[in-house]
Figure (cartoon, rainbow, N blue to C red):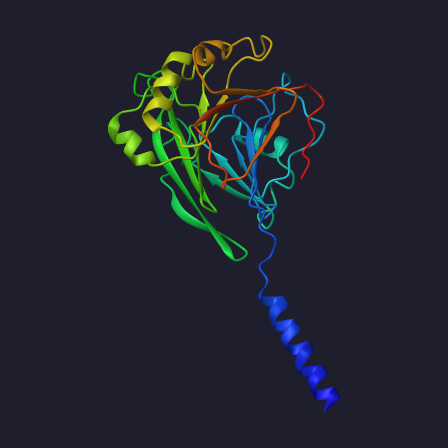
Length: 271
């Protein structure tokens, strides 16, 4: 009888233990690697990379680990991907999503409309693209661009790529609700600071705005600084001692612009 009671007790204990919720720690970490290159590490530990690049003015010690890569337009495509992402050519390790159809000789590239769910273990993440342009002349100057909208575990990220014009109501509606926005602000061949502010006001991100594609300490000298964009903004956090920012989506925040830092040769892709 004692053995039976002990067995029942162990069974009940196991049942209760298995019913206990796992530790809930849904944190996201955003890292900036210069220009428009960001990664987002999601709570499961998977890494989404946007716009990988290899530029002398933004050196890195190592290639970056990523599970899924999003590319908005073709520009030294092979070099950017293989030079920046670890195991980039291994399709079993890295899934590459392109917002463009590969170029054909003597013909301009076209958008590659995406709206698919990518299965990662037991979860699925939605990836969409919205076609737009890299200039205000319908692409006549710099060509087309693809904006990525990614829904991951209750948080929607929007990476505008190399957008070069303000958005119409139709384009804003196509993007939809956004929690975290990556917006180019350096002018010249992307949005300048004033137009970037208009785009942010139109999209109305709920949580964070990360400026990108601007000159840091004068480099690259083909772009302007982020000053015009940042001027007059009320909620700005300058986390320039690090290239990383971590947030918990359960926390209530007002839309805040996050300025990340860059230290040449010191950035390491930590998990």
